[in-house]
Length: 190
Image 1 (cartoon, helix red, strand yellow):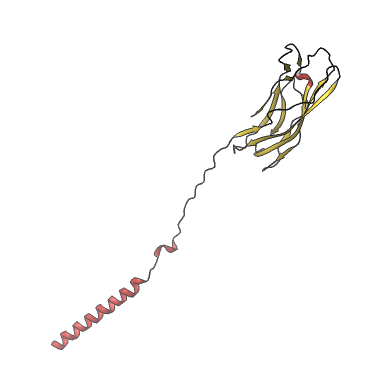
Image 2 (cartoon, rainbow, N blue to C red):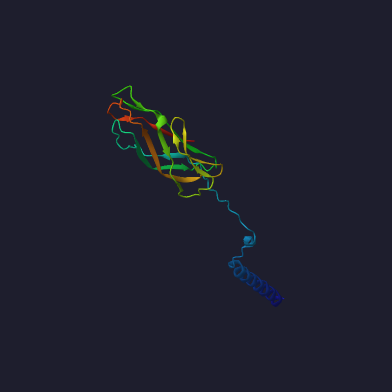
């Protein structure tokens, strides 16, 4: 019987050793049960609305006019930048208005805005398309004048309007006082 007990103990010990070895071998193998299951990660990037803005030269100087000599006095606004970074696709336009050119010294003399005209130049889209954009018509400043406008879902990005020419039509009146005549051209982008 001792032999039988010993034999049973040896079998139990051998089974435990085999079981231990089995656990050690398969325990060191890393089996990922979830590898067949997909994982989704949501990426979020917010784009926030920018602005509608414009830059124009601070000063435009015309040619000198000699009193008594009829002439067209020309000037050039080299470039206007109009930017729509709002991301809305809303239409916008640049409109200019101007009062008469007046003299500080003379007081009573002025050059009527009805004889001051502009002719908008060509436009160029820096990072967009000129589709749906229109350069304004030439005309006198006795009423508001459009420099540039866009339609809905167009005009997004930066636009440059080049070489808008200005013209003061002087009829040769001799009752003007020699002085500098000035006023402000107001351009609004909206």
